[in-house]
Length: 156
Length: 465
Image 1 (cartoon, rainbow over the protein chains, first blue to last red):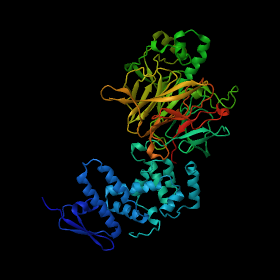
Image 2 (cartoon, rainbow over the protein chains, first blue to last red; image 1 turned 60 degrees about the vertical axis):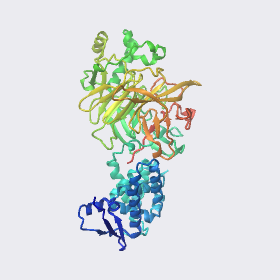
Image 3 (cartoon, rainbow over the protein chains, first blue to last red; image 1 turned 180 degrees about the vertical axis):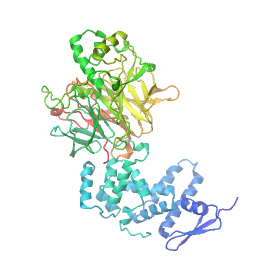
């Protein structure tokens, strides 16, 4: 049995993180890039800051560890609770996580963060949604009028 | 792009696949609409998604709103009532037809005119689709009008007035077994009869004033679309339960004629007489279909006695019987619904109605699930709907996952009027909600007594433009 190697991930602000191959391969992007090529031992991620990358690695670590305890009863709830706490972050960090999960193609993290964003949208008016996500108005006055008119009942 | 600042630009221009994923997690149509109103980029994604909806079966049905008369009894508009927040919207929907909806499916209302032409109308997009007339209804009416004068065929008369006389029948003695092997599909185009009198205008019956009734309003009791015609304009089907004997007919988008599902068993004497006199084929078979469901490419129909039929309306017309007749519920005024649960099970729901204060009111529901589909399919009672909430009435019976919609209660049945009887008097007003857990009916919205002759309420699933 070959020992699993260590892969070095370097963030955009040049902080290096050493992670187990198994943890790094939670990212399909990294897995595809490294594959069987054992010569390479690290990569630069120009799109991910150290703050976000450390969170991402934390997530991947947890979920790789978690697989060892899959059989234990009640474990599912514990993991869900951990996930729920994990995404209790400020909007900027949440954005970074969504972005990174997409770029690195980490399915579980992508599901988790997209679901979190969806929960933040549910039940809010468009104005409230814009405030939550700091989106500036991009409609022309005509477009705005058209939007309101078309689906009036949803805006009451 | 790695900045942590909340300039706002970033959320607005997330990559398409992320916005798709986020939008896909918003089950409520209202949330999707508000999503589309946030900014141009999100709006574009929302519209693209509407055209190509995700395949998640749980997104099949939207939480319906209740379409009710406006407080000022308008004849060309209706109001919407939200059962979750228990309030009437100020906003009104323009609905140009002042008559009962024969059905409500995928956001489209089904209207049957005096000419028996059928119109699909979407009050949200204000689009109409005009379908050919159900000619069989025209002949039924003519026969009814003429038999009044003729009274030569006691047997035949019995069939036509069965519904009116049903309370006098002893149901236990009725022998009734639809024979699957005898099913035929009959198409209007094969009719040799003379042209229908085309009634372009809605007749205004002076006796009842502008309020109602037109007998044609009750000629179709319910209709179910296979899919939303907006999304699939050339590939949808509409199946209806029509006529005094509650039989089945369907039409495909673009067809010129309706196709009827008949039974060929027929007493030869009666058939000969009627066919030669009225040039119409007679189906002696007794059918009492109550509800329809479209599921996985097939239509399923459930009758009053628990018989479940599957119908393939595609290129190979075919029906198969799934369950045998049972006598679980015999009373004629109890209503039967067929619904697909969010898990994909077929449910048979009985609405138990009793006479209270001279009105027929719902007192409870009993739910059965189709079990042992591959072995011995039959209906087994269930005590809970799990996470589902059902919406029943004149509409296409649907189930939703309650947790997808804030304020919707799981294990509840939301019901409104289900009027299939032209002779109903006293005005429909049987609207409420049934809690399966405590077995209680609660009322929420009630029509004013002055509005009892307005078109009955119906559930409608809002659609996105």
